[in-house]
Length: 375
Image (cartoon, rainbow, N blue to C red; front, side, top):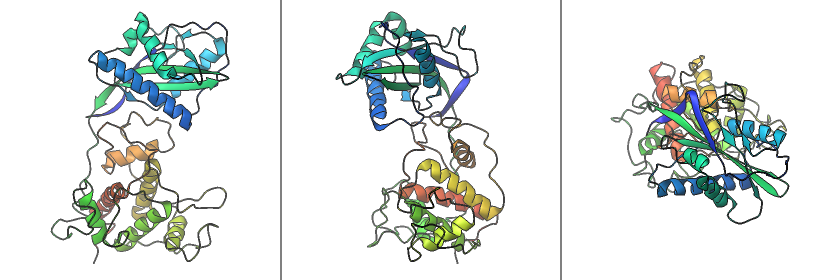
């Protein structure tokens, strides 16, 4: 399946029930990062919508997590207190655009099945059903805002044109099959990332979790990733500064990862938190991984990855803090995303995924003559 980016102009439609509001209400616009309760509500709306589309033989739509359009709709909805609003596109005026519309739907919180009732109401309204059952819709952006005892659901169905998947970079230069032994860990065979894991063992970047295991589905912590990257630099012959092991107040100087954390911090590859901590046991997210790898490449090669040529993943907002890094990795072939055309920057990095990320990073360093194969 192709990855996606918004078409130009973006074709957006929004759906909601034909239930008029009796009184104006004040509804806060949704936060960029949805709470756990909001995420559950959005998933319920998505599932109910796709069940309804399936009943009509239509393809499911994917959840698009850029809430900018939803925020625009709900801001105007809260200002006017009206149920039905025409909403601007990303680049156009609020009104007079026949291709873009948004509707607000009010529900009471705490009533079972609120999401299902909202979708049922949209389905029962001929004008809204036309949008919800759009045969060309590929994604939906959903907002669930609670104000007092009520929840407003806003949904925007999107037409997003498929583009070619980012082409994954081979790691053959960093991991020549004639030299890399297979089967380094007993719990890795059969994994999509098995060859990359074996390569990390060959480079002595990882020694596994003990007793012949690698734990491919386990999460990577900030401390572990620091050690993986520092070992990669060392094995490839790339110098790192010594760094100050007392740089972060929550990293014991005797900690397994203290040396790597100090070195990468001194090199500008990793940062701590404003409170002076590093939080080495916190899991690394996929968006953070993209930032760390671009910085690691910059330190090793003394150059930056080129500015991105595409916005590869439709569910990653263009103003996401890691969007540029994610797109740079996709351009370079270090990241290809999931089969459903998503990158999921908020998910934690699995250890086997980390192996593929890191070996592709090493492959480019070897190609450019910055790093050498392990002795």
